Amino acid sequence: MRQYKFILLFVIATISFQSLFSQTNNKSVFVVVHGAWGGGWVFKKVDSLLTATGSVVYRPTLTGQGERVHLATLDVGLDTHIKDIVNTILYEDLHDVILVGHSYSGMVITGVADSIPKRIKKLVYIDAFVPNDNESVALIKEESIKNYKIVNGYLIPPWVPEEKSPPKHVPQALKTLTDKISLKNPERLNIPTTYILTVEKGADPKSDNFAPQAERANKNGWKVLQLEADHNVQWSAPEELVKMLKEIENQ
Image (cartoon, rainbow, N blue to C red; front, side):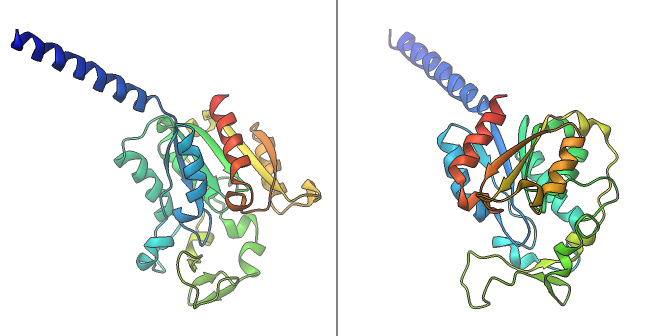
């Protein structure tokens, strides 16, 4: 009798574990990539809010940024950052990923989609660059570089005092912004893609700094949405951003 009870308990535990594993596997997976000078830390609040809805969230930090600032060198380029995210997805064995890129990382997620399109379920660009083949941030928007101070090959975030303690924005290798992207895989064009243009209250959307990128998205046939917030929507309107991301997920 004890043997039968043990077998029954074992079967119940196995079924429960399989059920739990299945539920975990059914959760939506977001990989959220920060913009220039940042790190995964900038999306901490968004991560918390998305996780509370039942999603699984990864917010990797690009090489040379955030807590990986000690790895910064002048050799870090756009391809380095693309590989950062490709390897996050491959080594975490992620599938059906909703890949989100903010600002500079529009370049990054475009390269990721070109590299491993079968792993990507949806793409979301948040106030982000939309590159064509053989383009760089510097070519798309020259003022992205010329309006900032460059010291020893690094673009300096001028709003951050040197004495400020982490977490903080850090200098970024100029190479990441001057490297041209190479796009070879037409499969990426089949991935459902949404562009979120953030516009400050009372501002004209047509005069927004990223309006030309939203127009590119529109010409690509992507869905273009608008959200009232400043460029760093992850801080100024995280709840509204998460609501929009969940709507995109469920479409």
